Image (cartoon, rainbow, N blue to C red; front, side, top):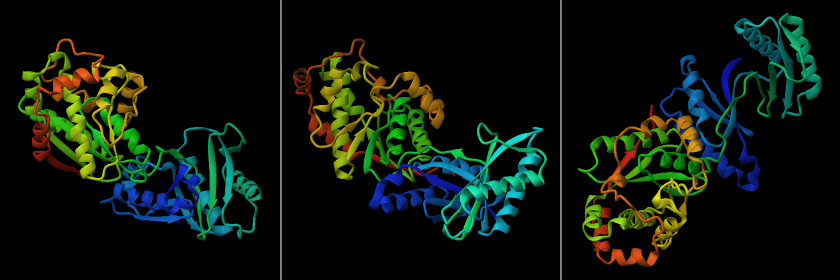
Length: 397
């Protein structure tokens, strides 16, 4: 008898003949998440197991497993060789621990058996009834209740000759394994929205890269460290390392400030950002760009502004997972994933440099193109790309 963590996936069940691809990706992401922790990771049909770990690491392993996209739940289970005698012993051991740690005088329960191994001689319902009697015969605190019960005693009899006995079922994040839906370049500003956008696209299986535009010395080194800290938090969810392209944007902004109508400054700035992002994405075989834009939140996020910036894109599509979200909903997610406190640190990003008093909210593409004629856009873009710093962010230990 040994303690294991039993993990279950969700949507992958729907993938038919392609399921193996998703299962392999999920297995690799789990390995990446638990790298550096002394444990064994294995697979059985429709389940993943973490075993042979030290007791002190259970909480850490559980927290890391919960953040691996693709898993819908996990349980802390006892693994035994499948036999009636072994299962009964595990049930007594587990329910004894429940009794010892409970402050209740009465605990209601239901026994539930899953018999994936059809060679086991007792049918599921009959075996559940038998185990219920075992519990009632050996413990005074437990009472059977088939609905609205306190705990569910689960016995999962698998095809590998092992049975898993557990009571808890801890929710995981669901979604799809990172890396199964292609690659995306997240425009990571340092605010609340963009980390949440990256999290949501990773949850749908997108392998993330990130790009940050900085305007040193107008923006501080603390602003840079803030963005890299956000990237590090995101590695909890990205299935491994996160590459961040740090783009020097000072000369671009100075040129816009000197030569363009101030009302168009944010608009022109974002059009150049999108051009740079597209070129970097193409060079690195990244199929989409991800932003934290939210319809109507600021002047650059009106439908006219979004259409305007989209018009400079030649090949790469832009995904905006937060486009219809309420700001309070975005904040709620940022708190849940651990980015909120870092996002609100008072270090400015490049979008706040030379900020005009009255930015245009309905910029026409024609007028934006007129403003851009005052700039040597191609050289500005090339110089920015040539001086990109690539930072590899490792997952937190």
